[in-house]
Image (cartoon, rainbow, N blue to C red; front, side, top):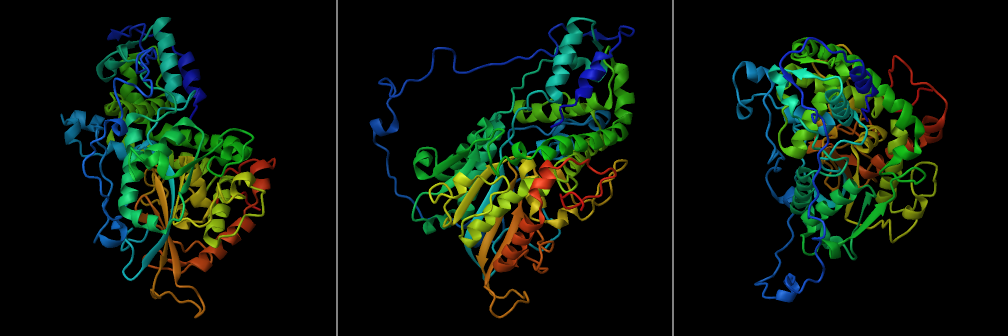
Length: 556
């Protein structure tokens, strides 16, 4: 995502202008790395000089307490607000007012789109609802789909292109900087590629701790060890392990559950990485989203271009380059704790960047992408399989037949299900499940930010995003239903915001977001029937422009 070849193209057109300010060092933009532990210092196990806790003994008292169920017993939900140890940076507006980072009134960290840390969302349209279990209801089961934690940029994307191009120009034709861009004279690229940052590791550990405190009592319903899933990418495995360490504890987690790792690579089916098996979604659709986003970038970054260009010669600050600099702010913050790129932009420009991500996902990975529902529908099949306790028999999507056909790798009797995946996949899943409240104000305009829009990526798929399905046994709750209907309900909570389910056929309006499980299953089965995976993923079509799609399917 966001390879932005235009970054390289724009920098390749750089011309030497009148020399002003500080000449950029020849090492500016160079990549620096550090590996620990030092070479030859790997620990050998067992190490006679450093026996482990089992060998040392003397552990002190070790009785365990009972399981927590704070999602039921607490009067309110504990909200996620911490970004420790990250610094919320100042903006260009703060610089005008001589405000420091700590004094900044604008929350840059939570305007970084899919690169923002997750925080609790107040509401997705049900302002009186809460993640806490409604009064009179009993929690029976929980389904969690979570994103990995904060990571380094993907290889070959805009930040890496910017650093490489700047380094090349600094070492050849020369670049001069002054004013707010003076830091570039000695700036080095200190980011790795794709793996978790230390902050990203902490996010998943904390998510695991929080999930144990909220839902730990459901462990009493297990007769065997849980099977939880992730994919084979390193950040995905690390995210799953850090979640498990937080949930079970660092000394025992590897013995307390089974970690299923699905191969994430072209040619392998996985509902947690469906894009490898859906060419239209991964290629044409995603590029279409980036193209639309760049149209918006030319609008919201016009003032930044005029303001910052006088401070650098040798590099034309095109909208694509300025977007790369905003991305560098986001990535450096979650990796290094702070970034000098952040104060270059105003509050309004950071709001514009947030909306840039909304556009990118809407048209490239969400409701406006004609192959989005197709990429999410495989998970919907698995969800229905779990809710009905019946095996999948139709394998014409990204479902992995080998995995889901086995009682060992895909059990159907777990009180807790945990699946680790990516931002793009969660975006596809909520589209496939027809959470229409998110698409209520789309398609998104490309020339202004609408005063009210519901598709906000900061709230939908930030780092460590979590989508939770609660299965509950409740009294009638005022829901009109046939006398024979079950008293079992389901609802979905995205980053602590309860989702309205009225886009699902038969699910009624409900202040707590509840839908009878049989009705929900029927609605999901309808979605499975109406999503044409083969056509949307493989047919030879062009994404319509203007794109008025709102359901993630090619219009028929």
